[in-house]
Amino acid sequence: MTSAEAAARPRRVTRRRAQTRQRLLDAALTVFAEEGFGRSTVDRVCERAGYTRGAFYSNFTSLDELFLAMWEQRSAAMLADLRTASDRLGTLESVSPDEALRAVLEVIPVDDAWYRVTAEFTAHALRNPSLRRVMAARERAVQDTLLPLVETALARAGRRVTDRTGLGHALVAVHDGTAVQCLMEPDDAAVRRRREELFRHVVNAYSIQSEGARHE
Amino acid sequence: MTSAEAAARPRRVTRRRAQTRQRLLDAALTVFAEEGFGRSTVDRVCERAGYTRGAFYSNFTSLDELFLAMWEQRSAAMLADLRTASDRLGTLESVSPDEALRAVLEVIPVDDAWYRVTAEFTAHALRNPSLRRVMAARERAVQDTLLPLVETALARAGRRVTDRTGLGHALVAVHDGTAVQCLMEPDDAAVRRRREELFRHVVNAYSIQSEGARHE
DNA sequence: GTCGTTGGATACGCGAATGTATGCGATGCG
DNA sequence: CGCATCGCATACATTCGCGTATCCAACGAC
Image (tube, rainbow over all chains, first blue to last red; front, side, top):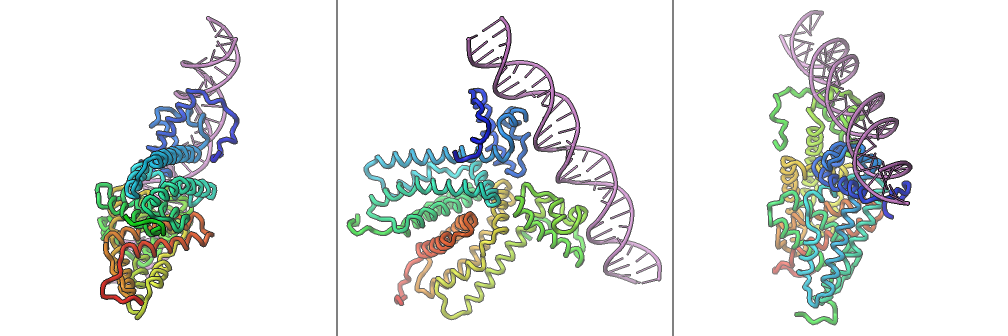
């Protein structure tokens, strides 16, 4: 319901149709990552997916629509992974904040292609009010998924979050900022360690030792 | 020396030439911010600058070259501003960390057009090894300028930085991450407050009360 | 199997952007 | 003041990408 494609005519989605649509979406990720969204063309996406432009225009009306659809699909998948990990961690008895952090960072891998696309999408959204709203909604969803997990892990370590919204935004900002750094120097393990370190610091800074908790 | 244009033939740079070159650079910022780098064309940049394509090809060989030149010029200017502010703060007697933070944040305004371009450039650099090196160098320069300033301000508050490189990278990451948030919701003052708050937290997290200092 | 429908390929015309080649006024130099 | 070079405009050929219209094959219902 988030995207606008629901407004089109209610075309019956057959299996065949769904497959080519998906292949186009997958190809789009690769092509956008390689060429950049602005320099990408319908031709290239189709070529990569193994179709011709006829298939494209039968499934999408513009590159923008494909881009948005792809981004929404991929980030929804990422969010689902996050929820799964969150549930899994929730059932465990003892989870240290460090373990929780590691688990989250594993689920949200700093994938090269995906982050390139995200960077493009961000730049694109800065120019497009409706895309801005999409991104804002996504950020809220991420926070809603992430915060309970973080709070649970912290609670087990005897800490309580002081500023929920502050922490939520901080986590997203830190993720975005450090992800770029990781991709800029992909072979430097130190960058990733610093990333983790920064997350730890931030989580600590936005929480305090809760009164009833005994230390260690 | 950072860019590669020095490899061209040593063309005498007359005043006239420098002017049109500069106007093209200025126009590029606007156009790239409005249309996105990928969607920008030589035509549009020239139109905006008040020239024709002849002028462009007389000064640059490609849009990529113009983009890089523009980015380097603007970020060099920003760095110069930062140094100026740093020097000015250095001469003052008492500067609280908060004041220093404010001063720095004012010098690095989250300018809409500029940050859109930065986002584009980042995305572009993620795809281009040589641009990556340029960005990495720039980040190092920012850190080299910023860290002394932060350390001085902290020292006056009786604090000492524990992990310089960690703090440097953290500051850049936080800036990038929060700048996006500020631009996504430009009218929301709360976002900017959270940004400042996060900076404070990070600076605190990467420093400790130094031994010889008396509190207040 | 037959027929209607659907999915995608092919063919076409068009506009836009590119890069180059050439022309011409402006500018600097003696 | 005249000449040579410079700087930008103009003209041109070409390529590229788009969107549509049409066609053919695969599929599904019965």
